[in-house]
Structure formats: C-alpha cells, structure tokens
Amino acid sequence: MTSIVVTKRFSEYPAGRYRADGDFSGQVFREDLLVPALAKHDLVEIDLDGAMGYGSSFLEEAFGGLVREHKFSAEQLHRKLRFKSDEEPSLIQEIWIYIDGAAA
Image (spheres, one colour):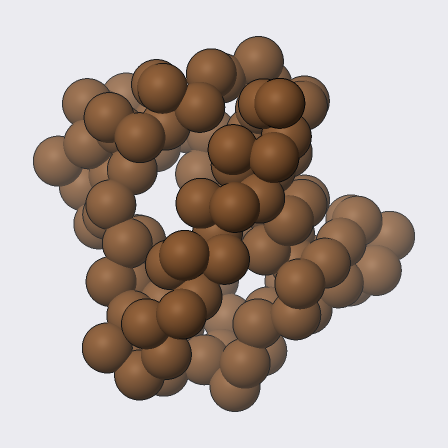
C-alpha cells in the first residue's frame, strides 16, 4: 500500500479540471500521481485532509477520469482506492459518485 497525502505530495490548493487550468488541476493529479501509484500498488490511500477545499471539477477529473481516460473499471477502483477525509467526510461519497457515474 502507498499513501498520497494531497497537501504534502501535491498542493494545499488543488483546483481546476485540466492541465491548462494550472499546475494543481485534477488532470495533473490523476496523470502525474494517481495513475502511477495505481500501477505500482495494490492499494492506494488518498488523504484529502488539510487542503483549502476541493472543487467538483477537480474531483471529477481526478477520479472520474480514471474510468474515462485510463480505462479502470469502477470495481477495480473500489478494490484499489481508499480515502481519508476526517475534515470533510462527504468528499469520499462525492468521489465514489464520480467514479461510479463515469463507469455507467
């Protein structure tokens, strides 16, 4: 298992959908951190705490994009991803909605 603490490995200010939106967009997070971690590890924990908020465009692109762009199935991601969000637990449910919705 590996852990990605978003604020330590990425940014305290994740924002935007596409790479063109800035260095801390959902696409950058997905392509540069998340996909390589999923390729190397059976389980990846994402710690969402400490950031200054997550926009829906960031979350949908980062996690829904795993299904659309990288052809992960929702079932694979339910096995391989774990989330930690003590500060805003509803983020976890929101992310699963984006993953399952992209697979539908």
